[in-house]
Amino acid sequence: MTLRDGSVYLIGAGPGDPELLTIKGHRYLSQADVVVYDRLVNKALLSIPSEFCELIYAGKRKHLHAMSQDTINQVLVEKAALGLKVVRLKGGDPFIFGRGGEECDALDAAGIPWEVVPGITAAQGAAAITGIPLTHRDHNQAITLITAHRRSGRLCIDWDLLLQPSQTVAIYMGLSVLSDIVTGLTERGRPPSTPFTVVSRATQPDQLVLHSTLGAILEHPQLAEVSAPALLIMHHRASHLSAPTIDCNALFARSCGSLSNQLAHQDG
Ligand code: SAH
Image 1 (cartoon, rainbow, N blue to C red):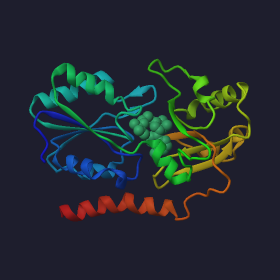
Image 2 (cartoon, helix red, strand yellow; image 1 turned 60 degrees about the vertical axis):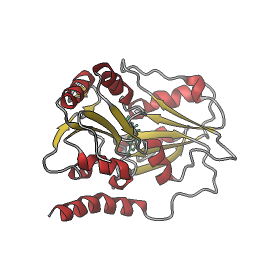
Image 3 (cartoon, rainbow, N blue to C red; image 1 turned 180 degrees about the vertical axis):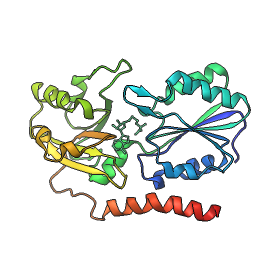
Image 4 (cartoon, rainbow, N blue to C red; image 1 turned 90 degrees about the vertical axis):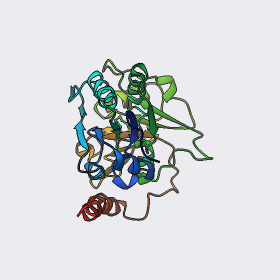
């Protein structure tokens, strides 16, 4: 199937390792006329579109947007209205804290057809590399994906949701408010012994995993080394579970490099 002219395809790029892009996402990218991509997208994926494809950076940083969401929506609408095949490439999954919904609303309002290609969200990538099962029949029957930030930028947490037992909680965009989250949870009665893991740059060559507890995480000697993007996971990791026994760091480093090499080789 070839992409339709004048349409927008929202593609999830996954958490960082370029090999975690879906086959469908890869195929769509290779047919795009325009790719509008975010900061969290692995740049190796930008070698997939043809040399004639226009690449537009729509990167966002906290408090500093390279492009406002309105401008991004406008670019998507304008490029599609020209009859181009537009790919909107987003980190993780477009519909999980990815503003994909807002972009679809804008496309609907402009009468532009769109399709979503799902991606592996950060919680899934982090679960895979840490060996923390997001669900487990013995411990956690539910998963909560929550963000520590709202549109206003203020900390706004549904504490009752976080205090529910038998669940895994993955907190997105929570690193800068880690101490507020830890304090809020302990003050509301969550035991300090609760397993708590911080995963920085999951599935990327420089990924960092800090396994700790709610009571001890703020004193972790490597906490200062954690850099964004980072995910906080409160869980019930059973002591008998171990982390993956294959050296994932080496594998991911290799796949990050190999995709770009492979594509460069095909092109050349
Ligand atoms: N749509 C994305 C989430 C975007 S919000 C997804 O589905 O994953 C950005 C937040 O996602 C970051 O602040 C961080 O909390 C989390 N995140 C994204 N990529 C990550 C990664 N590789 N490792 C850890 N956290 C990540």
